[in-house]
Image (cartoon, rainbow, N blue to C red; front, side, top):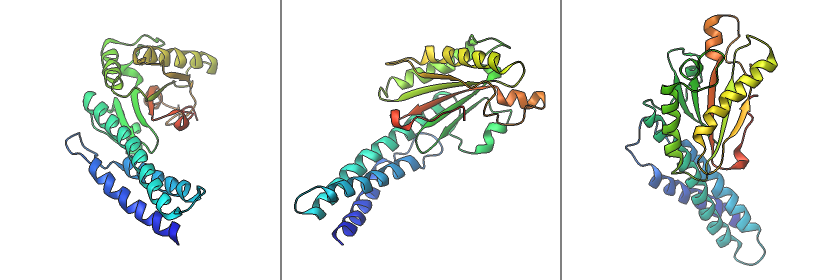
Length: 236
């Protein structure tokens, strides 16, 4: 009963805390879902740890643990939200979480927010010449803007993945996609070099059965994580 009350109290307190983080004036899509979910998960985890710690006053420890855990989780969520909004603003776009946005050929850059990471997708046509891995001037400028923003978030873990269409062999495209990811990672290196992956023509957005579809599948994706435990495999 004490645990239940503490969990409820912690959750309510955390919801009040997350309200303090909803600062207006960034750009569109200021819903801060990651802030809220991070705070709630942190609160529940902290409350359980506090309750299960040996000693008396379990209810008080659960409440304190919930508040501390909620504050930590909220800070992580806010950092992701803030990064997404700042990067989208710097790149001249907005945050777009519509899964169908990646299928729109008119969108060269898509910034999206996810529960555990921020993703920036660049269309291949603005990044590299055919069969090349050297960044074109405009693309280099865009990536440098991301790098400048990352200097504000030294704890962010960065991962870069390259994707091709199925023209040519899998191994050739594997090497090409890796070189392209490396080109982007070289610019994004701040405190530590980003993780890079070549995905060849894995994880195609659409079937590689037309030239327009192949153009959609050729892309570079940049992932921003709050820590190593949040890493995903972008090739799957």
